Image 1: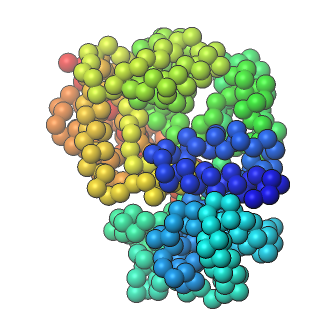
Image 2: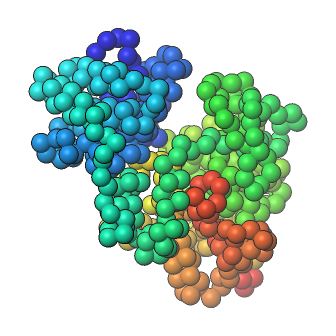
Amino acid sequence: MPASDPARTAAALLLNDLERHDRSLDELLPDLDAKLSDGRDIRFARQLVLGAVRWQKRLDWMLDPFCSRPVAELSPWARHILRLGAYQLCWLDRVPDRAAVHTAVELAKRFGHKGIAALVNAVLRRLTREREHIAYPDPARDPVRYLSVYYSHPEWLVARWLERWDAAFVTPLLAQNNQAADLNIRLNPLRETVELPPNSQAVGPLPGFYKVPNPAGLFAAAAYRQGHFQVQDPNAALAVALLDPQPGERLLDLCSAPGGKATQSAAAMGDRGLVVAADISPARIGRVRDNARRLGLSSLRPVVRDGATPGAGAFDRVLADVPCSATGVLGRRPDVRWRRAPDQLPSLVARQQTLLGRAFEHLRPGGVLVYSTCSLESEENEAVVDGFLERTPAARLEPAADAFPDRPWADRFVQTIPGHHPGDGSFAARIRKAQS
């Protein structure tokens, strides 16, 4: 592979690592950035990786007619290189067809053998000639398969959503999941003056949140290093807004890393009081500590602790932002759609039920708890909360509409849905503990 094409090389290597190792795309992308020195190469490599992962199912559908067997059954290198080439041919107008095919063949020579190179060359050339005539499943006869293929989502997830909503509702959700996610920031109110990144635009329902159109160099900027802002989606911040922490209180963030909600809570409290940011992972709690230090938060105390550990009622407010299926953030984390399976939901729900119960134990009488996820699945959201309320006489739901009147995403709970509400998918429920 020519040394002049480091972006495609890095993209192919990352796709191979993503399949071989049990690591998420979020964990691997910084490695890609570290391998490339040119900002344009970093942006192009990221675009290739995210596009190939996001559109994987549709890419395979487009390639399969030209292969002797399904793309999913080919060798890993053949799969990754064909998907990268097809993505460039069918999605990137600025890449000439001949360049997309030639560079894919060169990648196949480097990481495969002559047979793979010949296969890649033949398949991509046929796709170049016939891509306008690709036929998709009939949306009227088989809507699940059509939506799954055309919008590149697992069939089981599309089927679940079509059981809950009609196709007219599901289609914008699927389409939004395939859009590049915005990078949003929350200003640090504890800084006397704040320097915004260039061309930032106010975004979301809460004050102090901005979209950064050009995030290149953001994390190296002096304003970031000096704690002027924290990266956070405005919908993820709704859980803390619903919790409404006050100065001088004691607050527990039960599953804190990487610390966006814990630092938001400490800032909302004017850095007066105590925010215990707990997480089971020492490495991830290190990120919470780094963010607290950068933002100048002295009230935040990071601790390594399993949220399922029994507790005593010592906190005025508790946030239980629990691990979940993450089906509300598939636009931001496109690999999650391929890493999840329906049989994982019961174990996730069991963990969520345990964490909600432990969170309530940590709450003093009269205190407030918010349970939140980034899931759209009712089993992880409404069902967990309603089941807990039925089992716990001392728990009382306080409707989210009381805190967010006249918002379409706030009723009994907060529930934002991509494609229908700006930003990520999020769920939050506010529960108060009886005085005695």
